[in-house]
Length: 347
Image (cartoon, rainbow, N blue to C red; front, side, top):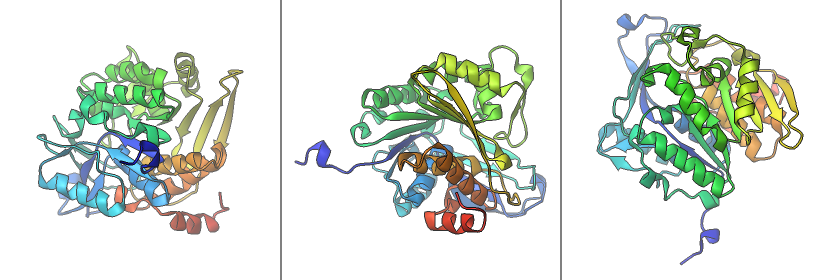
């Protein structure tokens, strides 16, 4: 039998939600006027895995799929993409679904169907087989922490990643309608920071991770994924660094403005702030763009591109996907990214 060192090596392991995504075909129509939907595949960690794989990484996905046709739909897509699916359990719960209206440039009503779904029922037993000894990065999403048994399973996975020398990437992924109390999101996010090396999130998500008692700062939008959270993000990041001894970077996604990198030297504790400009495009649909950024950023980071160029690649991927009608199905390849940036100043 081949030793573990001789077995297949991977770049990244991604853990969390997956879904069938039903996107309105009636662009600009209010939700009540939608006549048909297009069926795609989505879910933040799944989008990361697909996006990073299309760019050239070997990616592993741990999500939960039901023993139902929707689970078959997602599994078929992932296998065709080449994402490693052999660690994905098929359990007795239903696969998740998402419905989205598209009213550019700023209205994207979103409805999740995730009650007791397959991926939120991932367990510690599902985590144990993951190839932590044969990968470099473990990435997970904040929504994983919203319910048990996924919460414990995710924290256990982050512990195993630490024990095996992987870097842990936390996609903050604040979805307020997935929590019984939005303050619980902050409690859960802060509890896992001790295990994390890199945090990725929007200004609002970073602020949400530090919310404790005052829920008046949170304003939920129809889009859910574009929830506004008032606060001083610089103060939130300073607090985050204080309670997270391992975190060496907070990657702040800033939409059309690109990204702002808060990079900490773990020896001197000095923090450098670097702004990375985005690529201006006309917005078609905002859903999935942040995940495309994350996939691009991870590719560059794993390949040793450095902080700035990695974020620039992430910005390019996000800019491409924000012009598309879906998430995972429209993640760009490296050839597509290179063509895109060739007329926009490169990386």
